[in-house]
Every structure is written in structure tokens, then in C-alpha cells.
Length: 427
Ligand code: AMP
Ligand code: MG
Image (cartoon, rainbow, N blue to C red; front, side, top):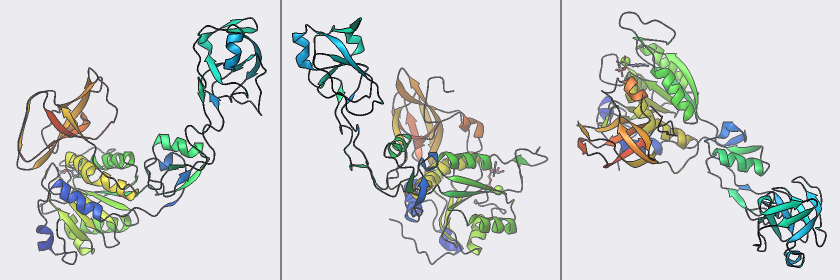
């Protein structure tokens, strides 16, 4: 457990917070984050990924009546033997039939998938098991048990049953459950609003042609995209440059959001002004520098208004790695998720892999499906500035500091970053 004295926000204090590891950093961050206050939200795609804050009970049983699970013919089993497995058609039951229907004795009813079983019937033959001879139905298959092809009322759930507990994350299937229970609105944690600020006087936006020492701001759009796919509502506030006044102004504007992301300006250079500005604005810096490659200068603070502030080192791969390790879990915590654990798999590596570093390393890699088996291939990557190498990857190899030496086929730990569906053709 790391002992943090929140009253000592001096330069010496945050310098003393150097080189903690990923797990320690995540612990410190999550300890500072409370779920957003739930509000009534439309039960539409906007709540996907957030957690509901109320229990959802079934208003009806499902199915609400005994129903057929096939298109076919409903029978009384006792009619079959005595009529030599052939019955006249008595009636037709479509899925939207209104009111109770009784199966006339000695007949069969043509029934559609999902339609209610008529009174008296106790089995359904699938259409493929029958021959239609004019108005008579011949049952080819002579195998029939009671309740064959019938889904009994309440088999899925009973009226009043608890279907989704408060705190459950809304997935597409659960959005379906909400609709099945007639819930068009629900108490839920809102999507966190995340403010994104780029720093760096060398930056110009993507629509500009860089001159001299300028480069384009690739992190801004990448962070907007990362925040969006993590379930947040990103608000891009622009490039602050390396100007204290601009950074302060944008920080003030950002404090109306639920979380703030700065990129660049957190390492040791003369113009890395974020730690200074944060201190002067009354923020508490809780993390500065971690045992991580790429991403060593990572910073985490709580702003004067109590908002979590992430200072991501400016190199694009550091941004990507620190976002996955620290910002995405924080967004999940703001959304009310309690069981936050990174998506780590143990996968066989496709080739021998040697890596040496004095820091724990997240090495870009590609998860592939080969002969129906997931494998991981190290990417072609030369370091924290290599956005092109990173863009060809969908995962990060987790290597402990020191020497990492694997043979092809060895299992290695992999953090999944997405896209989340892999096909052999993913290149
Ligand atoms: P910094 O963390 O500010 O020292 O920046 C480290 C490196 O990342 C420098 O080469 C910056 O030019 C680059 N960088 C910083 N911010 C961005 C950005 N928004 N987009 C692309 N590169 C950036
Ligand atoms: Mg900079």
C-alpha cells in the first residue's frame, strides 16, 4: 500500500512519487474516482457501456404463455396411435393469434414459431417431420414425447423476477432485456464528459500544413476516438501550446467536465509546464513518473474542483498505452463499474521474441486467429514515437522490466486494445 500525504503538494513531494508500477498507479487512480451521480436516461444506445442504477424486474413472464419453438403441427399425443399417425388439419395458429384456441379433438393445428399452444395440445411436430396430403397431415417421424417443441410459460423468467441488478453494465443484449421489460428509460450513470487538451507549441491541427519544426496534432483526434470507444463523451478543447496562461485557461474550462486529459508537457523539459500549472491552480499531484515504457512521465492529479486530471506524455504511443492502462479504467469507474480489471489474455506467441528494458514495457502486437486458435505476433515497432507501428496492432505485450525472452509457442500476457474482433485477414 502506498502512503500518500495529500497535504504535501510540493515539488519535493511529487518528485518523491517516482517510479511506482502500473498496478500501484491504477490503485491510486481508482481510489480517487467515484461513480457519477445516476440520472434518468433513455434506454437507448446512449447508455451502452454505462451501469444502471436500479434493479430491473420482469413485468411479464417470458414466454408469457406456452409457445411453439418451431413452425409445425400441434397435436394431442393420444390422437396419434389411434389415427395411424395421420390427422386432419383442424385450425391454424399464427404468432399473433388473439385469445385462447382449443385444438379440436382428433385434429392437428398448423402452428407458427412463437405462437401459443392451443388448449389440449401437448406436443408439436416440426414441419420437416411431416407430410401434407391435401388437408391431412401425416407424421413421418414416429418419435414423440410430451412437451416436444414447446417452451413452457415462464421458462426464461417469471413475472417479477430480478433480471438486471443495479450496477450492471449495459451491453447490447441487456439493452434488449430493458426493451423486453418495457423500460424506455432507466436510472443510469451518465456517460462521463472527458475534456481533452493538447500541449506543444510545435503542434498544428490536421487541416494545416506543418512548417519548420511543426508537426500535426495526431494525439487530439486519437484521444477523442479512444474516449468515445471507451464510453465517454469527449470534448476536445484545442492546443494550449506551451504557454502557462493558455494551459490555465483551458484547465479552467475543462473543469466543467468529469475528467481532464492533457497530452504532452509532463516530462522533464524546460517547456513541460503541466505539473507547474497544476500546482499553481491548487491541484494535487498524486502520481508523476511510473515504471513504464512507453509512458514514464505519466502524471495523475486531482484538480482544485476535485476532477481527475491525466497528464499523458506527448509521444503518441505513450498516449495510447497510458490511456488503456489508466484512463479507460477511470472512465469505467465513473460509469459505475466496480469490477475493473484490464482485458489480459495469455496467448502463444507466433515467433521468438527478445526484449530488454529497465522498465515494464507495453510492446505493440497483433492478435491473429490461426487455425481457429488465437495467437499473438509482436509488432514492428521502434519506440514511443512510432504511431505507424502502433496503428498496425490491436494489443500490447506485457513485458516485465529486465529481459523478456520467449520461444515461438510460449505463452505471453497480452492486453487487448481493439479492434475487438479478429479475423485472419486483419492486417
Ligand atoms: P512532450 O511530452 O510534450 O515532451 O512531447 C513528446 C513528443 O511528443 C514530442 O516529440 C512532441 O512533439 C510529441 N507530441 C506532443 N504532443 C503531440 C500531439 N498532440 N500529437 C503528436 N505528437 C505530439
Ligand atoms: Mg511538449
